[in-house]
Image (cartoon, rainbow, N blue to C red; front, side, top):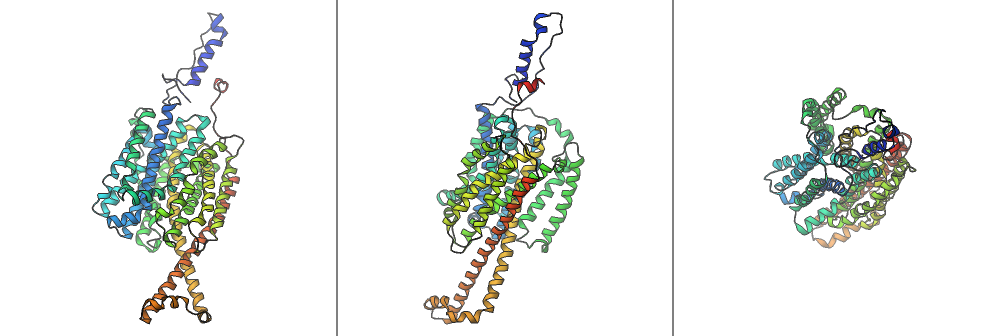
Length: 565
């Protein structure tokens, strides 16, 4: 609803003026009772125009800035570890701590921006991310760096829920689906742009800018937010009903579960005492958190949303679809790094094939879904089929593939990702009323972040187990048929024969080369197995979202006639 400068909503103002002009009792009968227009309603939604657009774009830029801070440092972790003399195991905590606080903060953000106002909250959090990036390259040890990254993740996680609320609140109903498309950029455009940015900053500017790249973007986004967003009043009286138990149980519970997902495979899951304790106490505390949210008068989540078939299906699909997109993005990168030895600069074209078309595909898919003749569930199913075809092409993976072999698969992902993410967000966000926006915003964003953790855990677990399986099978096959293969000669030994006069040294090197070939072949077969699994998961979600959720229609502004009724 747009409003005039004095705060009176336009449709109410127009209805009052028409009542004043068309009432015959007021015009011809002085004794008749006077019909006054409806009193102006308090509204802090500005009239849609240039300032609103700039403010919304400022929040969008801030979210992308936070996404770059997350993905660029994660992709460039090996370079950061080398520059800051950090070991491999310590480096894994660098990512884990950031992600744990990043995901946990998304759950509680809507309460805080409703209290301090979107304007103040978004500016403060954007400034804090930039300020915390300044000392990051100069941290003296891993512990201090992880603490700093934890605070940075806490502030970065506060921005995506703000973006979702801004797009749903300040955009007119006719283009609200385009706002959902802009929000979907944080799940499709930003992550795929991480590799090219890492390659640019590290290769051409310096590794410090893997941290500092967000500073100029933060300054620009703060200026745009300060200019465009309305200055809503503070509502500090909300602290009188603050859900302290929910915060004190939910925050450590979510952090513990995210740590389990990121560190579980490295520590061999429940064979590790740390993982066992985190899973048990984190799960128990999370149950307490859910029970508290069910009965608290001012909850962070409304658990009864899960009782709705449509919302439950869309939220579960959101986790699954984003996890699928994360796996499909990770597989080519891991193959090119592990098998072909590519650097991020060489992998960049593969990521850009997915990232750059999003600037066209996201508005296009939003325009298609904004038509009331189009059922977004079928758009989602078509997108899942695109991802299924991309996964099927991945099952043909061999050790001979190079970067060019992935372009067709990446092009299918460029179509499939926006076709799945936008309808899923529509099914979850548009099935509720405006008053439910903050509650569903925190839930959707937390699950979106949790999907990345699930994708990481699945990728690590499936890769390790399938690689071990194929390594055992290949070595067993070689052992069973070794005598039969001796008649074919020893091509590895012949190639290495002239490298050293020591025959034992040549035999040792030949054995090392043989095991390298076995490792590469086992890893490739493991990746192909993951692609095969993804085919059936994509088909499952395509069928699920046609059958289970109810159809939602793109929003439209109420007419004057409907307002009069």
